[in-house]
Length: 230
Image (cartoon, rainbow, N blue to C red; front, side, top):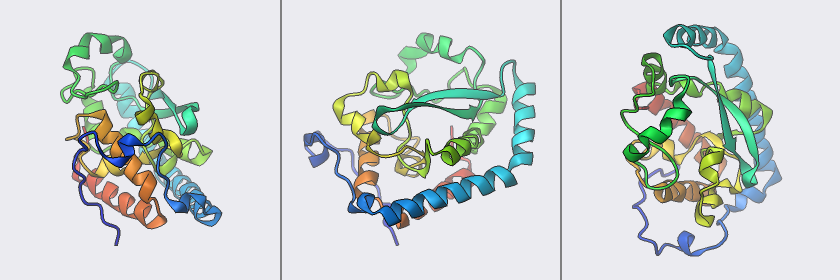
């Protein structure tokens, strides 16, 4: 059984903060384990995309009828090694959400270049429901199938956020990003400092194993069904 116990926020003296290079689990050097991880990603993503296609259609109609704008949000993010790519989410905000972000900057609840606001007025009514059950994230399964993302891995930052990352924060991109991660199942709505979020990503990278991925996926399913997303 993999332990997913909480980690206390570091005080600036932990080993990861003092290192210039991320600490990798030895399993990242195992071609067999990496092949199994990729095969699992492809299988699960393909099966879910097929089985959930009727739900995708219903959600697309709901988004389109809920507010003006496109069904999908083109999510321009940065992946492993700083490589940019475009992923997709069901649009959960008003059409001009990015233009309105600067006006809300003073309400940012995160310390660092990532924006987080618990009562974000840009979120539509349909979008709030999608986010509650993480349904807006489902189109990322296509990115998993393409190989840009994995089911489990550090969450990819927006390109605009990555441009402001410190060297410490960029360590989270040492491996392929994922749809879910330790941050999703441990303190997703409580963490308000980007460095604490990054420490969870670095913990995942240093502890990675196939059993840890499985444990995170099980915990993620529980979080989705309980509707704890925002």
